[in-house]
Image (cartoon, rainbow, N blue to C red):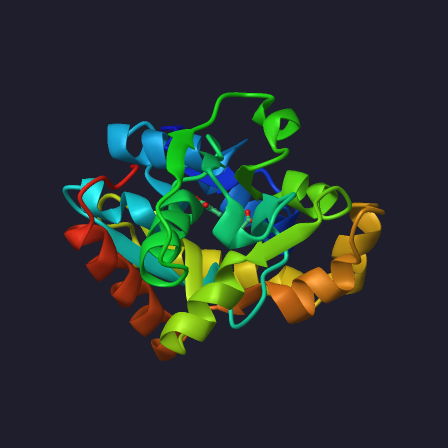
Length: 255
Ligand SMILES: C=C(O[C@@H]1C=C(C(=O)O)C=C[C@H]1O)C(=O)O
């Protein structure tokens, strides 16, 4: 029998992606068609741009780097208001911040922070792409953007927590899309249909998803229902396009 070439799928390895992966991992038909790798967002972006994966739950900030891109799913990682897991953490109020360390695992949120520093908070601190273990260096007038599960933990450690999706909503009135399922070539329609159905399953079984991923630093039910918003609506796409417009005009986008 001829083994058909598998579709290489890259997913974000954080808790926020578990509801989307729940159904994918439970679909034998889909699991036969794909190789699934899990990694942090900046690496998913790099793999998609290099073509070593065919589709990824990729930071939307990578879009300008891709020769070809298709958003193939109705599901995404976005927020209507506060997202809880993408914040600027600081010991001092925002106008006292002198330096911002930008999470090396992120592509979208670090660019969002740059946009907000300039256009929302109107400040211009030193901004540096951080290295591993940088979270320990968030102290005094050095603030830091942290994303994902590590951000949910950091909430207990910083006096000031500026939620970047909340700030974006205040500035633009729009929701914010962090990551979407982006393919770098046209994928078969039968795959896309199965893939969408599989993404939806976990959202209908959140209690099971939560039971499978015990976590104490933050209430996952709140996270999955009030913070992260999983459906890609027309308004979300408007928010995404507004963000991509800012990126196009930014002099130093980090992608
Ligand atoms: C909301 C989040 O969105 C993430 C943030 C991303 C980024 O900054 O590049 C990419 C993927 C998302 O998983 C989070 O991980 O906390």
